[in-house]
Amino acid sequence: MSSAASAPAPIRWPAEAIWQAVAPSLEGFTVEVLPSIDSTNTELMRRFRGSAGVAPRPEPTLLVAEEQTAGRGRMGRHWQSRRGDSLTFSLGLPLAPADWSGLSLVVGISLAESLGLPADSPVQVGLKWPNDLWLSGPKGESKLAGILVETANLNNMRCVVIGIGINIRTLPAATPTAPDAATSSLPAIPPGYLQDVLPDLDAASVLLRVLPPLVQNIQAFEKFGFRPFQARFGKRDVLGGRAVRLSDGTEGTAYGAGENGALLVHTAAGMKEITSSEVSVRPVNPAGAAGQSTC
Ligand code: BTN
Image (cartoon, rainbow, N blue to C red; front, side, top):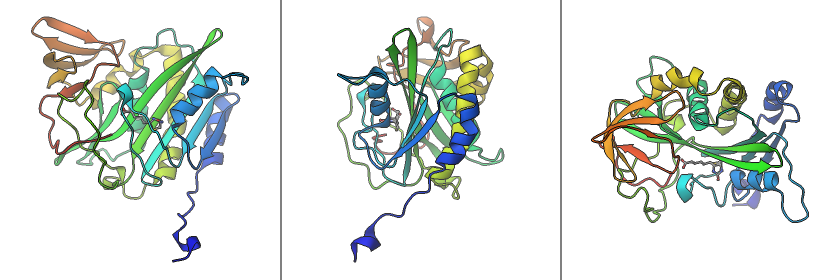
């Protein structure tokens, strides 16, 4: 086989269309697509922080990577992805909300709503506090996407990097990784794939569908906080009313997100508000959880 025959087909990223949709409401916005980078979050954090001899660059940026060589998940986990089978991008921008609580939930709400599964679809996109999108349907639950929110202080402003990884279609068998101490006691959730429910969507069309509403929702969050999003989260909350276990061993029943985005869990010691994104929470009996996920 010639090398030309084995070269991967180019992905037609809708960079111009996204820029046209977003730039009028986000001054200085740029879109960049890279064939490969360690991690889009790491790169935007490097730019926001600056480094020896390189001044910090706080421009609002959408950074898309066709391949990540060191994709990162929450709590130091690895994020597995593959060119064309996954959508991996980060949106970085200066942000000044009065209260930052609930931002990752707003990102999840925006993604879930804009993916636009038909209302009568037997499978729906649910939100698993604080950072996951799950597919929930008759065959069980699986993890469709993950969100990693990080911030950098820059003089008197704060910049946020919102990293998003969406599984578009089946990845080759996941490479087993050592379970991390924080979550090894929690039931695993298998990966889920968007093309199983929306077969016509590929990574590029998903990006065009989700990015403009994401910017709008983040701007609404900056002005109004999490409160106007609380009910929208409730509609998709996959933990509500279920027995859950936290990574610190606490067990209880989940009661949705409060006005500030905290997870409410009724435990033997009373109602607990879980605010730390460093806490993992899982349903005690996730439906359809088969096998170990590295996502
Ligand atoms: C999680 O579920 O733990 C969060 C996963 C976030 C993955 C995305 S992929 C794009 C961006 N770059 C990274 O290195 N991570 C985020």
